[in-house]
Length: 271
Image (cartoon, rainbow, N blue to C red; front, side):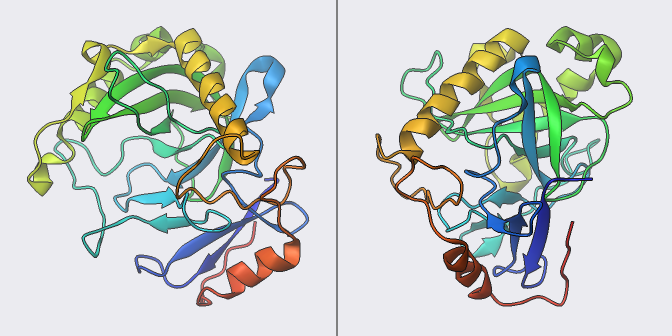
């Protein structure tokens, strides 16, 4: 049984839609700050928050600028964002999500490029808001609109084939063509919107597990500096309920008021 639950506010595919997170005791939390980065630090198993289930098209993401950081649908130029089906692919070709407690501001071989990052969990299909445990296998560095955008390849530890995956070459061996499809998808997914093809750092080469782990651990240190106010996070909202040395800690009453301020939905999922 999951240690976390979710609660929807407003209707799906609306600008007001928000998916808030709860802990096992039913208390509201931030998926960005309150869910630990590690599920098992000794084995390098990480928690991953699923934002977009595999094969779906709505561009959902953790809202880093809002209190409690709920999942919402991305909006650009006043319109809800959906990714197009780029033949032969249907929507997102993996479960797309984020590792908590990381701040993806790390330069690569393009010194002027700083940016974001997400996790691509291969194989089994998950649900939006599900928190899964993943093994990291490698990473791809996309240059998205002038910023470095890390794409970490991982596998759910509960996947029946998880034991066979330990590094990026295992993906190449077990799923021929899958990594190439990933590069193809990221290169072309914005073309239907009239944008040029995306470019990649490292000539589009995947880096292995050790490289990916170093990137994640570095971004976790950046998050630590952010949450303890040792660095300026700009518009990032650091409201949390569990980080004891953080000046941004708030009460459960405050968290509840934040959620209740959002329009209630007839669809409520408790887990």
